[in-house]
Length: 127
Image (cartoon, rainbow, N blue to C red; front, side, top):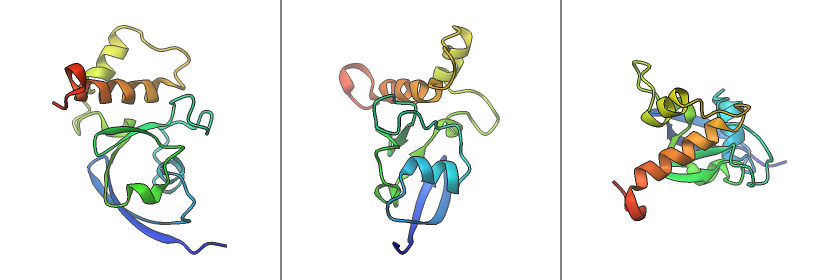
């Protein structure tokens, strides 16, 4: 059995430390170690996008990313988009105002992908 590794990362603006098996995905670290269950486990193969989060502002599929790859990084999950006062991110607000939900399971991943695109700006340039 593998020894656990220590990881430190900024998750949704807060410093988080955890001890995990080196094979743990970022998805499982968020859900099982930090109790952030907004990021969904869909296909667990990187095909559906329900597990999308941002690492240092870049869109990643957390089911295909080892938690160790995010050590020292800034991770944003769906829970980290709204302001501390509870004001929704503009993309979240647009989804709500336009009833852009299907079953709701994939919605966090869709919103995180849209946020990443919005942050990239026109033609893929970072804003």
